[in-house]
Image (cartoon, rainbow, N blue to C red; front, side, top):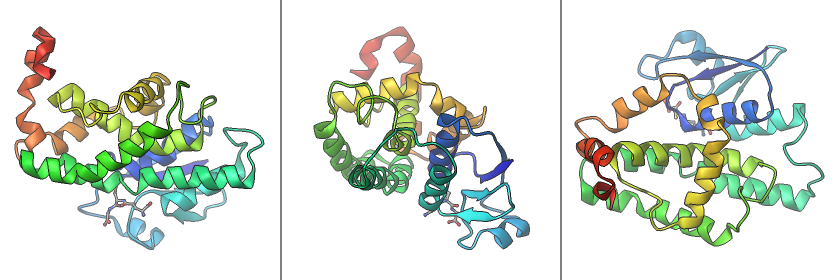
Length: 231
Ligand SMILES: N[C@@H](CCC(=O)N[C@@H](CS)C(=O)NCC(=O)O)C(=O)O
């Protein structure tokens, strides 16, 4: 069986596991600590990064883009009969998301509001592009769910958790993106593609006492009593 080497809150890993889940491909998952990478992992991963996917025949693959392409080559596509041009466009829109994973991570770790605003600027530009592109259909390209949706899922999933726990809404100016987020999260792929304790780990890291978003956590309590908190 395929094995994925993961770090629990890594968005690049989630893109890979979400695709495996969307395609109902069985896999095992091993978690490592990135602060203390085991030697067996360093022997497998030329860039020392997760995800690594170990194929049925024992080959270790690295770089999430390459892994996603591999998964597509060994399994039926999520969408049938795409032209080479459409596949190229899908890769380009997927890349728009994945190149912002670390930007989102850094924005979430902002120590104060001003830093958050600065770091979120690139995310705003990204969501503006998506907002223009999205239509009335549930997913990025309509139906069915596509590789583009899978690539954006980590960003949209994390934005939802941040909103729920800190009331900070990265998507507040993007109604179409919010609708898309809602539809994607409704598929259950977000939960299925992460560990059971993902949210606790995520909150512990990004909504800690040392982050601006962490300082807004009390807002959640108020939010349960009165919606106005998030106004
Ligand atoms: N370009 C890589 C990026 C993966 C990446 O940045 N992974 C992070 C965790 S989210 C990592 O392993 N960091 C450890 C390190 O760089 O030493 C990919 O797409 O797979």
